[in-house]
Length: 253
Ligand code: PEP
Image (cartoon, rainbow, N blue to C red; front, side, top):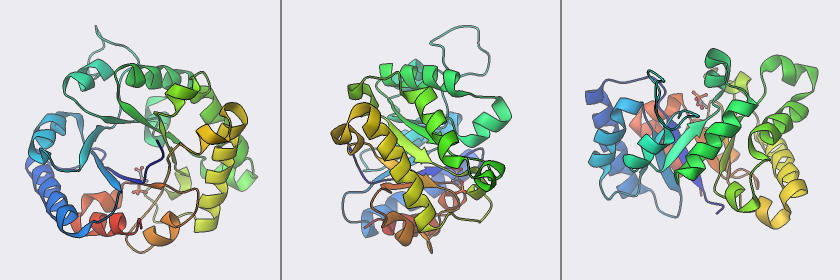
């Protein structure tokens, strides 16, 4: 279902103690200040999933993981499976973040398998796509992003696709302080939604939440989130400071 979502991606940051403090500050500020129907998700390092989930208790804030394996169980040292996340009652998982694609060689086929595992476990994948700078400069960004979406998602039924959240994250805007303009974000979100409509029909495409990610902060969030096809954000750096993150969330009207 199309929902307004702001998800924080903490990446590999914070000690457990620091993580608990950040989560409790965000929880208190969201309870006091955030009105309306925006869903807030904290995607935290794997070892902190359970302690932070317990800490959040009945709060409206949900916990997410940052990756899962394409396998269920077995001899895959260091990996975490979707079934493990399910057993910990973790409702969201980021898949295909550009850092996973770049540093861990993740590709469309693998990500399609991970999306399947997450969905089979009843976990909402936040599937990331987005082009590097050289592709943007060459003008082939639409083509690449459409290919990323097709490779990882187009084997899904319409029913399954509607359980996926997509995050468009231009790689040149991630962690660089260089944000896509609202116009650039809207253009790409519209391209993705049109692509979904061409395969699944407009009604299905209109049900998919498409988040923007790439140096979102409290100053640019409101303008980005006001675009008709931008349903929220996936937020890295700005999610590591409670005041800044909650101000980003408040940009979602
Ligand atoms: C991200 O990691 O998904 C991200 C968008 O990071 P940042 O907000 O720091 O650019």
